[in-house]
Image (tube, rainbow, N blue to C red):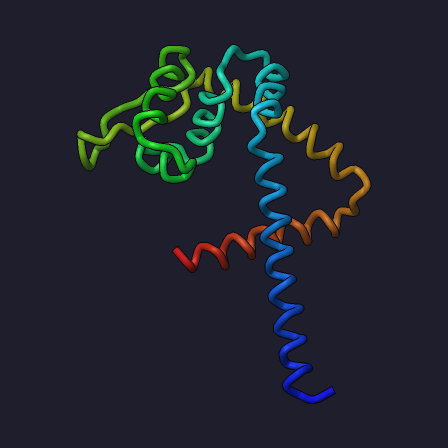
Length: 160
């Protein structure tokens, strides 16, 4: 096989591999973002919360303390819809907001003590689900997955 054909073939394989990785990521994200999964997680936690508010709740727990703008950016949602969900979470006693110490126009949200309890309950349910899903994986395979996911995250972050 001529060298130029071999190079073309290798580029094609690499290109297809990157596309397959992207497709696999889309598959994973679509599973993680299904509202029925959120509703099941909420029910398992024994909490009365809408699925839209649940996603904001999880985001706050992950980023806290966080501003509405940062949370909206992370979620790919508009500021006003995230702000409305934060208001609902605050009314439910799960979140409290305060003006930012650096700019009083910015609201900063954190989980309340009750919100942390709910987050712990949700985390335990999520861990059980993940343990079941990975039951036939070796500890090394799990560690490799975690290392590679972190590595991919860091690589993708460089493009921002």
